[in-house]
Length: 286
Image 1 (spheres, one colour):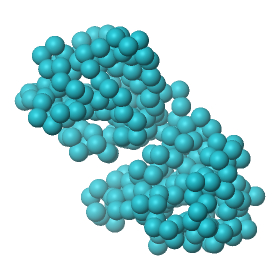
Image 2 (image 1 turned 120 degrees about the vertical axis):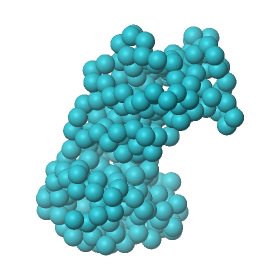
Image 3 (image 1 turned 60 degrees about the vertical axis):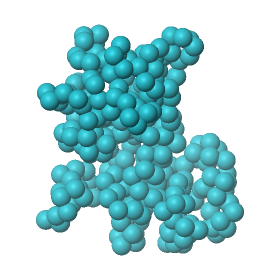
């Protein structure tokens, strides 16, 4: 019998109505665990435990919400490495592949072991502050983003690849994305769509103040460094998947490499990236 850790999103799933429906449909096919912070919702057929203890027992994680919920689940399962199945309760749901209308069929496929597990590369950001002597590590499935803290000011960000100077970007910020993240913020900022099976990093400026500023794709084995340029030193921040934010100023050195961790995604009908791309982004079913 499988043990499943449920990661719901109470903003998408009011009163955990969908979660309770899923638990009922799973029935005796699996042991269901949830973080004990959700115990007040009164879901039957599930055991409530502290998150770390629950993850120690889990064989898989069900992310119930949308792509943002799946990103949160990726961070939850970062070190324990359980594969994640995303259930889309929102709109686009590019990563969360199970739609509500397909719930029964999808659960049958999962419990019949009719699925594959795909590994997606992640990024690791080393954030060093030479003034405070602090060092922080951030891991991301989608992207590491440097963004301005003041709406009316441009940033001046110097980018290096393997210590070779690339350019100083006068822009609203910079996105360093994985292939998985290439269909998220990076794409919205004009970056390319990259096949997730590729091992690469995508450097995309946000609203650059240069006509010739273009996205650069570099191999995952490279090291990308970023620091504040000398022209604009207004407040800025660096974030990983929008989940954790640190200060980025003239004393900050940001170093981005391929993370030692991966996110493992469950695909019930095989890995069909281009079909999902066509359906989700182009709105075409065939």
